[in-house]
Length: 194
Length: 366
Ligand SMILES: [Zn+2]
Ligand SMILES: [Zn+2]
Image (cartoon, rainbow over all chains, first blue to last red; front, side, top):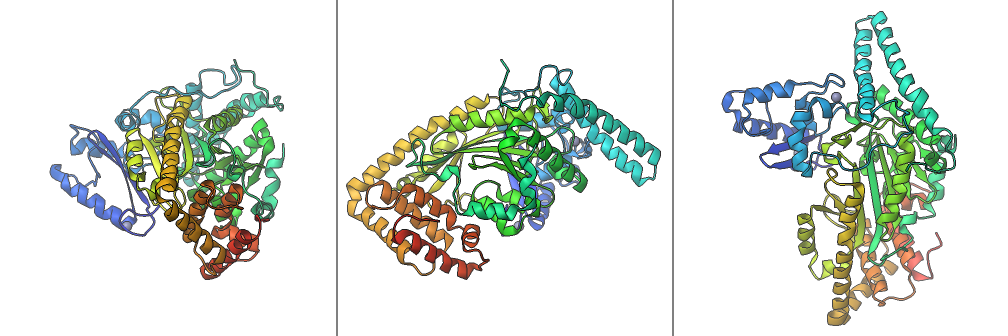
């Protein structure tokens, strides 16, 4: 995608949240810097140095905003600031962790805050419980993997091994057994859901 | 297991055999195919146990690619698919897949482990590691959103049995960008609307579509600039309605657009008979005689000739052949068919040669 102001590749995808309106801005690095400085200065009354690129919702002070921007997903580590700059979330858990912040954004985009479509089809009871719970089990692995990498970086090999075993445990429980086994018998393309 | 890994060893060979053919969606058949080129549905899906694509490490990326490739191969849906390792393709081969609409431009230009699984008729394509871990696409010729939806629903269901999709009760299928969350569905039709362009009604039509929260994009041009009067209409929102409702939302406006375009075509014939006949004949003349020609001009002229054929002003050219020329005169296809790499100048000469050969005597062989 090209920068909206020049021919260069857009590397910043900024989601602007203005009252009652969502707007996506795609810019190259230079234009993004200019853009963020400009909008930061325009609303920098509270003396914040953080370029915010637009107010999030009505009634938020710059301090609230700065705190919110530092809020990070415990699984993938993405901060809300990073999300606002890139317009892309870091992992499935972000929808849980930033739910309150995402709600007005999603409501503006879609005019709705409740899914009404299909749910994943799995073999009956294959996942051993409700699907959202299973998704949480899975996203926990993302955090474990990050901790494993940190442990390796600190040469804490004992810790790294524990994390690795925990990851394997989850993956084998959810992926190696039930989910895979459930799919095997159907080679004929027949479906049996009611 | 399977065929899914077969192509990984020799992707270029498989692509070369594809070049002599065109995908199902360009057959030029199907309901309303004088105006509706193709109907497409895509679904955005992610696995729950890895970060989204923009936040994956190189290792994650490779693992997700392998995980999805293997899971797809073991699902019933995978038995009809062939897998292409896009990360290992030459640039020209990636461009080739973009021209056939089997992968997106973004997917072609991305870095790292990624791939696409496609079926022999080129109706189904599954992109791995695009903006989301998995993008499933289903494309049918003519107006057949229902058919495309039914097919993709079944593919998605089969893969969903073996892949733990990221899903949330309230937000639905979770996607990297909140604009796709919920159903993850994008329903689109590609329309050929030359008469609305010539009669300058196209902007008015698009303004009314925006009011219905439908998006309009030019097909071949960059951004919103349409080339050759081909436009894509699609839904803009993905949350709060069922997939079927989104399919209907797009499907409902198509008959209206078809009606507008047909009326504009009739108007052109009735009111400006000589004028429009002159225009399409000149377009045909240039395509049959030019010695060098750009991709843009080719697209524009083929569009006019296509309209001329449909209005009965040009004989002995059939629609499927014209549709296939739209794809085969694009850069990567031209080079594949010729079997050599060509720079822009030589491509323009080769394109003109190719057009002369295929529009002069009889229908194109290959
Ligand atoms: Zn720029
Ligand atoms: Zn996260």
